[in-house]
Length: 153
Image (cartoon, rainbow, N blue to C red; front, side, top):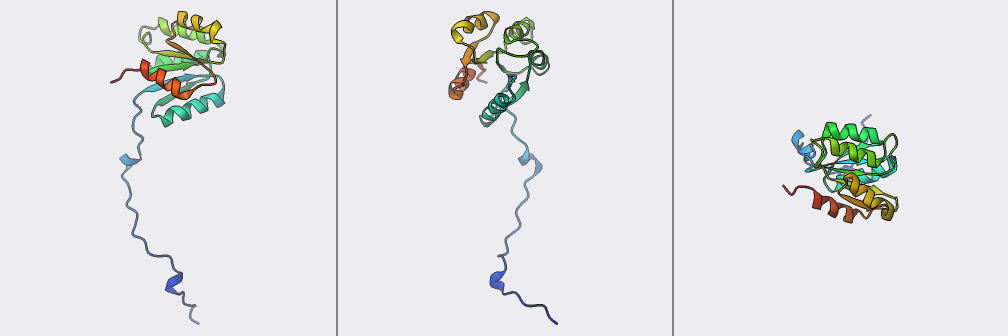
């Protein structure tokens, strides 16, 4: 017995083969700047990473103060976004430690904090920060401030 015939109208149209991209096309372009996000809240880190990567930044993450200092020394980021309230070493201590390192002394550091800026902004600047951004973060304003601190080359 012969199998039933399928009408040509019911078959999907033949499509030409899809050209395969070479491996280099799959590679992400290298980020122009690397940002170290020092934040103990994993959800905030994820949000910051997502927004920064969408804008083309490379992102490193640290969840506590000691990890921030170690990662900054190892990776030498172009800019650091840091919460003040970090476990194991608070943001002020992290800033002072980073500023004592000759190779990191000029790396811009922005405090991104929910603390009252009236109480903490001057302390942050005295510790060696370049700016203070209050949470909840206006990301457009944050990026504008970041770009003003990053080299234009």
